[in-house]
Every structure is written in C-alpha cells, then in structure tokens.
Image 1 (cartoon, one colour):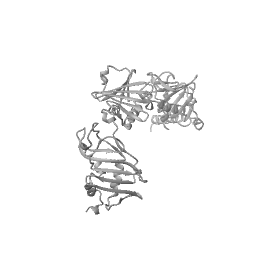
Image 2 (cartoon, helix red, strand yellow):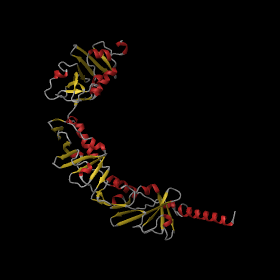
Image 3 (spheres, helix red, strand yellow):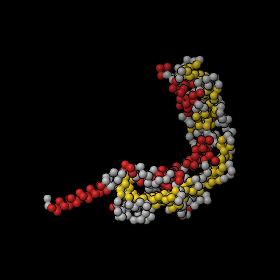
Image 4 (cartoon, helix red, strand yellow):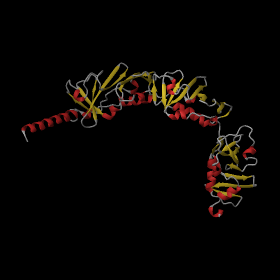
Length: 460
C-alpha cells in the first residue's frame, strides 16, 4: 500500500473517530448527569404561548386565551385543546440525552447554523409569563437515534435529545385547529328542524318525557334516532378548512342539500347548511366565514323521511324478565303455554315437545321489536289481518304478572311497496307493520308451530 493511500485511510479514521467522539461518546460529557436535564424547565399550566414547527415548513404560534388555547399564526383560529394538551406534555417533558461542550462558534456541523429567530432549521419557543425558552433542532446524530439541539443563551453547549421526541413537536396545521364545527352542545339541544332538498320539513321538540315530532304532524318521535343525530353533530369534526371560500355554488350550498337548525331552551339558534360538490361534502354555519370539508357520513346521516324520525318501537322489554310464554291461535282456537325453569323451557299443560331454542329466539326477537311501516290513522285492524290475529303472544314474569302481549296478522303491502306483517301490542295504542322475518321468531299459526317448532324426533 502506498504512503498516500495509507495517509488517506488514517485521515478517514481520525475524522470518523472525532465525529463519534464529539457526536456520541466523549463529547457527551456527564451524559448520566445530563439525562435528567429538562430542556424546557417550566410546568404545563404555567405556559402562556408556544411556537412549534409545522410539517411542510413554517411555524405556528399558539397562545393561551382564558381557559383555552388559540392559534395566532399562520391563521387566527380556535385551537384544538386536545392537540395543544399533547404538545404541552411533549414540550415540558423533553429531556436531554447528552451534552457536548466546547463546540466552538461554528454549529453548522450539527445542523444548527444561523440565528435562533431565523434560518430554516426547526425551532420551538415556550413562553411562561415573562420567561422565554427557545430551542433549535439540528441534524440527527450518527448513532443512537438522537438529534442535536441548542438552547438560546447556551451557544457554547450542544445537547442531544431523542429524535422521536423532537419529531413529536412538529405538527400539521390542520391538526392544531379546532375541528369542531357546531357550538351548541348536544345536552343543550331542545329543538331540531330539518329541511332536506325536495322533502317536507321535519321538526321535533324535546319535552320532559322525551322527543315528539311537531312537523309534518304531531306524534311521539324515535328517541334513539334523534339522540343519535344530535350526538353525531356534536361529535362531528371537519376534515378540511376553507378560510376564504368562493361562491356558495362551488360547495353545493346554493341551495344547500340539507339545512339543520338546532335550538336550545333559551331560544338560542344555530343554522347548519350542508352541500355536496362532486365527491366532496361541505358544511357552513350561519354567521361564520369558514366553510368546512366534512366526511360523507355526516351529510348522509341526516334523516330524509318522516318515517325515520317517527316512533317505531312496537315492543320493548328485558328478555330476562319473561319466564312464561303463551301462544294463542284464535283462528284454530288453540293455546299453548311454556315456562322457563333451570335455564330451559318446557311445555305447561300440554304434550307438545318444542325445541327450547325457538322459545329463546322468540323472547329475544320480541325484546326490542321495531316496525318497518306505520299504517295511516284510522286503518281498519281487519285490513291487517288482526280481527282475529294469526297469533297472539303473551309474555309473563315469574310472579305471573303480564309483561306485554303482541298480536300478528297477515302480510300485506307496506308504504315501500314490499310485504310486511300487521301488528299491534299492549305497549302502544296504534297499528304497525313489522318485517316478514318476524315470522321466523313467532309461529304464524298452530300448523307452523307443529311443523317448525317441535323437536326433530317428534316432528317425524
């Protein structure tokens, strides 16, 4: 090997040794002692402002406002309180992994050239009243998964910090913005008005005993559906922000596809408009400049028809309470009772040996039964096959108290053009149509009971 080649190898080895020394080993003086050094020695609740790097370039400034936080730049907007809380934990919990002293005035080898207030390097600033702490974030170290960082006022010392922790200080701008759109809290809503393009106005009001429809007519409302609608709006979050919107037509808001109005007990109102343009969905709040991009489920989840909001609950009872079932078949003048004992079902007063699974399915199926159609007021029960019914199911508690009864009639056309079974129950003073599948849980006639409910060996 030539003298020149040997010299080159020696030079490379020396350079690498110096890099390792200054970057990872000897240069991190007192690393065991420095490991507990907090780079921002301030408590979370004392922080009054934050400057953090943004993914894609630039920085964001956040300031504490009253009990919450607000974005001050690059856009003036309410901040995501959860995102800021996470940032505060990351900032105040950041500790040095090591320390390199006597580095000299040139910090460019560490990716820390330039002034703290300028340059292109990432920087984090924390204010706590009159105190200010600032940190520049430089290059990754060659080994150990750390990065070089420098504190304002300590230019003669370079620290290292875990790279994953400094990366956590860099955020997306949209993530820092408060993505909540409506200001009315779900618990405060006492009135809802829904106008879907091309459909009749729907309106409901919350009374002491629950929700009732007021438009297009007055009657009990579907409590779960209205509650879910309001909670969905309360939890809805924007997926994008349009700060300087163009014409409303560009967002499908002239006219909007859906207009929702929420009211509270003190008559505060919030008007919400939703639209669709191409494959994108948008939302606008009356009186606010921004337009939000929203997920399709928010627009698609708004009830379109009055049937969706009407009370459709035919029967509701805890299935565990039913210990006696009586099947009455008025058209053949037959009656069969079954009792639950020791976790299973048995015949009571007759010889039919039914499969207990069918009785379990019946009790489960009737514990929460909804209608698929509601006949118009004044409908003749005979038109639904309920005079007399095909079957009457009576459910009793252990002490003999009747829990509820259900009568099923004949299948006939419903409002959607399909087939459904006429029904009425002890819990609601009205007529219904239930899904044909209800006939899989309840035998529609004594012959169906004997053909499908008996144990296999008895049915042969």
